[in-house]
Image (cartoon, rainbow, N blue to C red):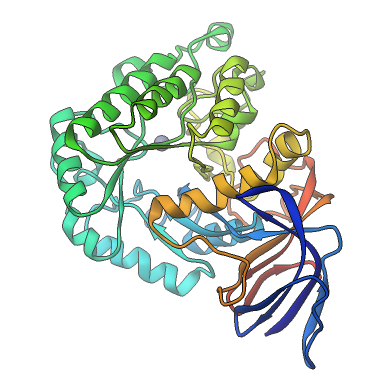
Length: 427
Ligand SMILES: [Zn+2]
């Protein structure tokens, strides 16, 4: 493939200003950048006019449901959903069936990804066997297969002594622990914030303190263990402020993520028991939304991650109490964040590239794509004047449990390239 992209505006994490540029790609590698490039014979030219050129995004928190729940999603369909959303790499969570807690099942998942995915698919591994919180999983064997992130995501690792030992062990192996924060006895079985909506709907809620207690406990354990901890999908403002305080001390390596739905929605959106707004941790209040956005801008949150959690229409059409927790996100994240935050001037493309392309890869210890000569092509073109309607036909995920279904938002992802492959193109 010889390709010349002309008239693009390059966005980077380092500057709020765009740089006008062309990019010549050959053999999957960027050969030249800069304005006014000429196309060698046999080169396909794409006029990017007004579009923004940037690295492919990377999502460090997705549920691809394979093995065990392939009716919801597979590695094949999940990775195509990622591409549709401008994402060129993901990290799977291990709450599959069987759980990803040993080298044999990790190897099977990586083999499936190699066969079925057009983007790199990384996987995390369980901290404890079967995510049961009792015995340590086969951590060293998983490390040998490249696993770096350990998590019992979906549940908190309940026993602090087990977790403390896991952190010490993981640290020696150059791994880190990612924490789903929730005191189960306080949270109860229902993913709805304890507040006005839980009272109105008559459902016992999960108070924000159920999350905040474990955020503090787990960072405190990492501090004592001298280990790196990553806090997943923070939903509460006070949880964010807890992370801010620990980061300000400078004596523990803590990173954190926030999900688009916790920035964009709050408990009032649940309205008349709409299960599209049921996820764990639950949507909280408008004040939490505002606090989380500020935390993203300030760098309390290093990265954005969707927690893409596909479910079947049947499951989500049950009543609010019975329906499973989760919202899809891979196909809607970039466009919805652009529509609500970048197009409205709340933050710029530099922050988006930093939080959704660069920092997630740094978390995983993999290189951040550069749009510069000599680098592998890993890039997207985004049209800020375009629009996207999230119809069932548009979606590549098996699941459509998103409140954005059939909505039209500003912005469109027009081109996705990884190496020699054009993964998505409207040209
Ligand atoms: Zn979780």
